Image (tube, rainbow over the protein chains, first blue to last red):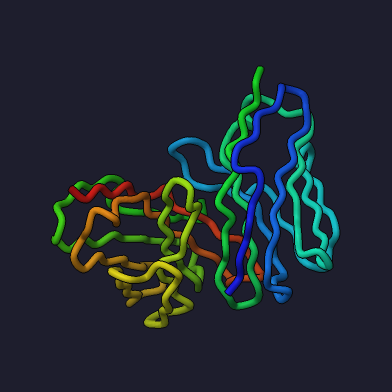
Amino acid sequence: GENVEQHPSTLSVQEGDSAVIKCTYSDSASNYFPWYKQELGKRPQLIIDIRSNVGEKKDQRIAVTLNKTAKHFSLHITETQPEDSAVYFCAASRTGNQFYFGTGTSLTVIP
Amino acid sequence: DAGITQSPRHKVTETGTPVTLRCHQTENHRYMYWYRQDPGHGLRLIHYSYGVKDTDKGEVSDGYSVSRSKTEDFLLTLESATSSQTSVYFCATTAQGGGNSPLHFGNGTRLTVT
């Protein structure tokens, strides 16, 4: 099956700085890569996703990049704010199959 | 999110007792999943369903069973609860399955086995 690795496990940044979280996957057939944000005590919520036929996708301060050759994808958050503090999970999946999750990154934005 | 309701939200039970968690969705999504979340392990798949009466095992299925008799309901049963099954359980649904559409999660059930 698929194996998704996520780094770093914890990340602290100053408010206004950028944050980058990286994930690698093992199954070259994976074609869909969502990112989830989970606040303390809450459910994971989708923040952005990317399909394998796209190299980059942006939504305001959040962007995701995908390198299919190297089998890695990254989440970029610019101009971080205290409300960005949460645990972020990457995931990989392929058509008709399961979703495989990374182990999460705890992001702290220091005011 | 996607009209997913999990019940109960919290449960404390004793070792050796059976426990059933319920997931109810109102979005008519075909695919439903049960995950457990533990510190350091992220979200691990227990079982999933790709239609009524169609289910399959995930990576941590031992000690768990599921049933899906209606599109909207997906039940997770711990046959004989153990302390290692203390966790937060999330149900998730998606319309088109892996590779096509994102998962939407319920609010979770916090289960404590004493």
